[in-house]
Structure formats: structure tokens, C-alpha cells
Length: 159
Image 1 (tube, helix red, strand yellow):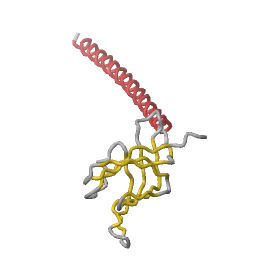
Image 2: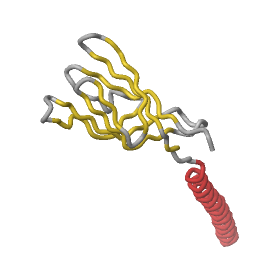
Image 3: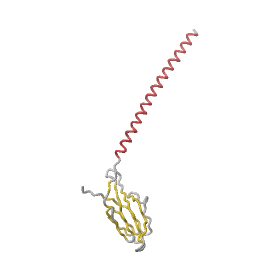
Image 4: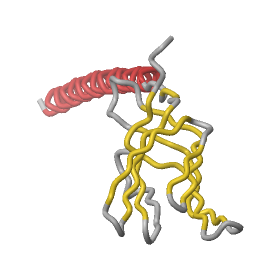
């Protein structure tokens, strides 16, 4: 009787072990298939995220405003790319401008240099770099008399 009980326990233990192995293999297959699915989804997202991003559109004309802090008057200028404009003692040279496509968040960028003519012989570079229309505080012109900010980068709609 004792021998039968031991054999029965051994068979039950073997059945439980086989059942546990089957469950572990099934769980492993499910986990692996989920991992493969996640990997494929990640590849798909990476592929489409690079193809969806559109390039900025090059503009031909820059619109900006200058505030004279002393007189509190604001003047608006339109300047073509690769051109310059004189305002009081400032010379503003425009090198490039671009804007986001219409389907994206509106954003304009302009590459420029600003010189201050202290006197006729001495011109001092006071700003060089990119200005961004949506965040003028990120790229400010620091001048005691003038504030300058970008309003628009116009694109040529005549094709």
C-alpha cells in the first residue's frame, strides 16, 4: 500500500511538473510574441515619424517691428532676404528666413545681423543669430533704446 502511495505521489508530481512546464512555455511564447509585436510597432512608429515631419519653407521677405523705448513708437519693416534696412542708428542685415508649413504650428525663423552705428566711422555688431517669432524672449535684442521682434516670414506664393 505504501508503495502504491509513493508511485501515485510520483505520478502526480510528474503531472504537475509537466503542467507547470506547459504553462511556462505558453507564457514564454505569449511574452515573446508581445515583444516581437512591440518591436514591430516601434519600428513602424520610427519609420512614420521621420516621414511625417515636413521641412520648413524658405521665405523671401521678413516682417519685423522695432520699438523705440524713448518715444514709445513702433515701426514695422518689410525687408527682402539678402538685403538690409537702416533705422536710426541700427543697420539690420537679413540672411535667411523660413516658416513652418501651414499644417504645422505657426513658427517663423530669421537669420540676421544687427549693427549699431555709434558714429559715422564706428559700427558695432550688437546681434548675430536666429530670431524666432513665437518666442522673442528666447533670442532677444539687448539694446538700451530699441526692441526688435520678428512678426512674419513671407513666402512667395507665385509659382
